[in-house]
Image (tube, rainbow, N blue to C red; front, side, top):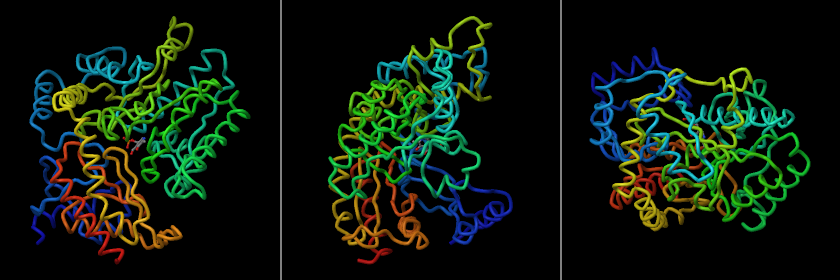
Length: 450
Ligand SMILES: Cc1ncc(COP(=O)(O)O)c(C=O)c1O
């Protein structure tokens, strides 16, 4: 039953709002969801219907919605000041958070540069890498090596190092040239996992052998390619990539915007293989999913290359108006306290094992090709033919249909083509996960047919 309020808001959506990553014609024809509030792992729409937040509001909710501790942190900060600039000045929560981030992240990372979104954190990492080599007397090292099928955000630099055809191809005239190598995707490789890993490492080695002299840095989503379909790398791949970067004198840039802050069962995905990047991009769950704060962390070696007298012209000319925003940094600090106090990462590890069991019936459905999972980062791949792994025709929009059915059944999530993403808030309990996976089971079974 649609309320009057819904009708009014729907009209406003139709008249004034252009939603991101959304075909407006399809969206407006299909009862758009209009959220009014949230509590814990659930969202409530303006008609009073409740839904599980099955993708953590696009992969960023850590402690649930409307959390009293996070709410209070914002109120306390608001009573001091909402925002002042970080350009040539500092503020209390931005300084405290920088220290916490340096303590939390791999040892190689010693300085924090703030921004407002994951894409910006990536852009900044690229610019820093480029200028690092220039300041060190190697301006010829000005290209980037990135992974096929990668996603690093939607700004032009981030798209340049991206590799998802359907998202990125049409922007080609705007993009700068990058070298690309394959990311290991055993499911679509004619051979076993070890062979797939080796083939990708061989391709990377060959590329570095040929081009390392002109490459500033390699950018990678460590352990899991997120938007590319939740592709989990074979064990040891990331460590080998790190070794090759060191061997060929190329900076290693890890993009943990999706994987960071416990999503994969470690605070940072790099920790799975003891990898120490030169640059690290983080965002999303940095504030527990509350406010847009992102950060690029760097080694002292990179920071020092920019450090000098003003007349040396090495100032890093990059910054955004809201960089280091006090409300965002304050809630990020409160979020990090909750990670510690409530042992959030240990909880993810436990729930990852639980959910693996809960997903077993889904894995047996005839049109489920593969379920990929690391921690609570999960992708369920739908295929037309399980034997041959033949995908559905993209025009059938199977993934979207399954997610639409899941919404009717009480859970919101989004597809990546025909991969159903399941990224619940990190706080989700065994019972809540059981309910969410049973909704997924029913939606997939009904839509794909059994
Ligand atoms: C790995 C990765 N990098 C960057 C981004 C972009 O982050 P944002 O949407 O905050 O710009 C995303 C977003 O999903 C991501 O998954």
